[in-house]
Length: 296
Image (cartoon, rainbow, N blue to C red; front, side, top):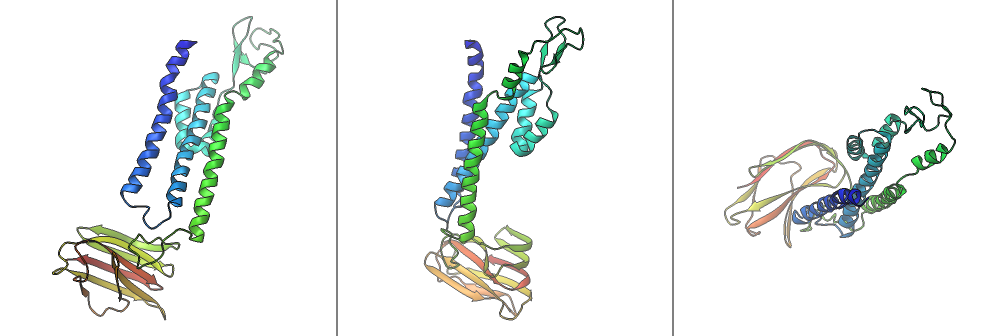
C-alpha cells in the first residue's frame, strides 16, 4: 500500500507544479511586455484567474478519467490526454460514448462478465446480487476529483463573466487616444493586413467601429534629424468621416488629420525625445484605407 502511494507521489506533485509554472509564465510574460498597460489591475487578475482555474478544471476531469480508465481496462494515459486537449466539455462526451463497461470475473469459470449480469454467459453460474453495490461504487468513485473540477469550472465562469462585463462596460479600460498608456478598443476592425517590419508599419483595413484606434510603437533615434513619413490613402470617405494620426510620448500628444492627403506626409519629431513613441491611427468612419508609416 505504501509503495503504491510512493509511486503516485511524483504524479500528485508534478501536475500541480506544471500548472503553477504555466500560470506564472503566463503572468510574467504579460507583465514584462506591458500587455496590461492601460487597464485596471482587475483585468489581468481576472484573466490570470480564468487561465489558472481552466487548467485546474481540465486537470481534475482528466485525472478522474485516468482513474476511471484503470477500472475499465482502457488506456488511461490516452484518454486523460484526450480530455485535457479537447477540454472537459468535448473530451468527456467522447469518453462517455466510447468507454468500456466495467466487468468482473465469474467465480466459477473465470470468464469476464458484466457487473449487471445475473448469470455467467459462459458457464451459466448464478451471480449474487451483491455486485449491485459494486455497480454503485463504480459510478461514484473519486468524487473529490469531480467536485474539484466542478468547483473550478464554476469559479472560472464567474471570473470570465466578470472580465467580459467589465470589458463591455469599459470600467478600468483606457480609451483616451492621447494617453501615454496603451489604448484599448471596445469595437471591431475588418483588416486586410497589418505588419511592422524593419521600422515600416503597413496597415490595410476595410472598415472599423467609429473611434477605433490602431496603434504601433516605434522608436525615435535622433529626434532633431528624423521625421515621420506617412503615405495614407482613404478610398471611401463618407460625410463627416476622418482619419487622425496621433503621435504620443509622455505628456506630448500631437494629432494630424490625414483623411485627404494629397501627398505623403513628412512630420518633424523635434518636439519629442529619443526613445519609444506611440503612433496611432484613430478611425472615424473612413473605409478601404491603406497606410505606410515609418520614422527615418
